[in-house]
Length: 389
Image (cartoon, rainbow, N blue to C red; front, side, top):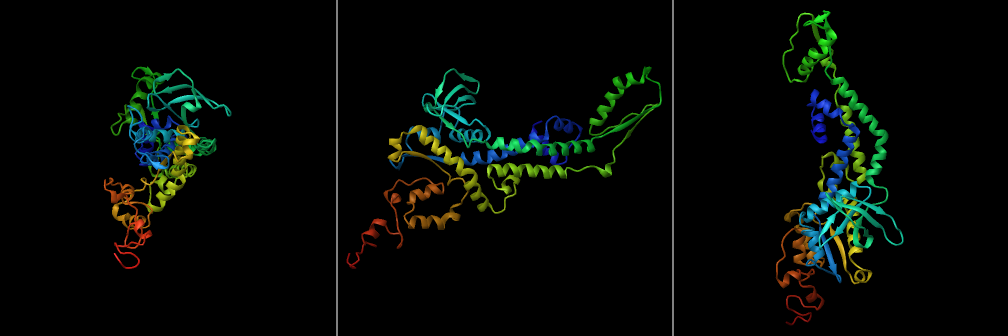
């Protein structure tokens, strides 16, 4: 059974002896920490996997380039863009060494493992690069790859440090709970021999097997032969509850969420004010990562001369929050009426396809949403300022 499955059963109070053995085989602090980190990193990676990576050439959006196709449609033969981005961001948030992306035959691949040699002046060198079960027997220079890495002190490393002492409390609480809730029995034997064997030998060969099967079973009858009695030590009216562990679990998730800058309510799975929570999540947890991705792609794909002319990559986070057309109608109208976007750009914001008509690419301004150039020329509804047509 998986770690997540064990913990789920644990908090639902569906523990039996078999489950206790499975849970006790792992460190509780490791299980909780891994689960919390997984949830936090998944929140961010799945949000970013919905984003469009926009590419600009000479200051104008260019969605017909090879770069656009690789990052927004199909980076390689085995992955679509959302899978690729999800994997990239998850590894970026959980791997202290960062993420290495290599290109081969106009395809993008995320390295499963690699070694990085730091060369501050001449550029880093990457060796021992592997893609799943394929080892690439070559050395990559920094200008041949894309290398993504957050701040030097990785978030996961910080969480590991915090849990060195805090995790002891989790282990202790789980150990106490398991100990207090485990079934314990006393066997009274009134014989020197059982079935013609010494008591010690008989216990090992027969009684221990019978008792184990009886204790592990959901129900059943234990036969008490003449000469021995099985008595339970448990006091069912005074058993420990997992309340302390539930609080420790909440603390674990809260600490991890703070490290990744994710709102507490999201980590607890109890979101009331969705709009405010999502906006906070995008601002503090998502945007720093998307900014890094856009900067790295721009740096690694384009020269200074190209960048000066407006060639760059930008991760668009506007598609992350869910919005219905009715929710955004007022705001969209104002954006169009003030020349912020044209109708086709507005349709894109709410997930609609472009309309291939010239007027849908026009910019409008207030005064009954007239064309901007008409207002500037003093022509409204075909009438000049003098009142003549």
